[in-house]
Length: 130
Image 1 (cartoon, rainbow, N blue to C red):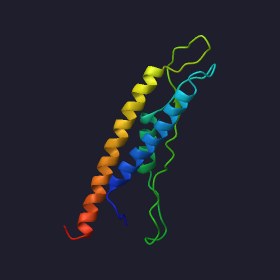
Image 2: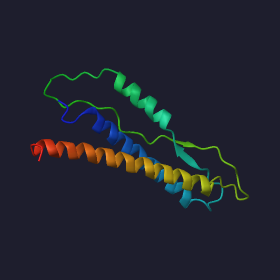
Image 3: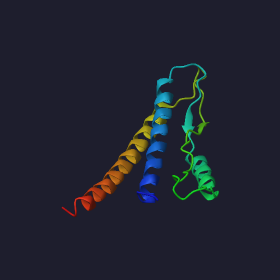
């Protein structure tokens, strides 16, 4: 039995992706002066494809009272980005990283707002519409 609708779990997965992306961007910014460091990124398309494969495979449970088996939460696919190398071999472009940081923050805020609205609706239903 699924207590919440599928949209809440999808929003949760989106928040997880945004969190991983935030860590990767922060790591890139922290290593801006590290010689030979190559900028990294989280590939959304690879994560989406792996999640779709996981959800499409049929997982059997032996008893209907068992908890449902969900798709893997492993969305830490990190790939090297195309980069331009500076004199010290570093491939981090600070302007690009800051733009991606702002974009990721807007995405995260939108997801938080949406999931907050979902829980607000549930709270209203629990209280009987008051």
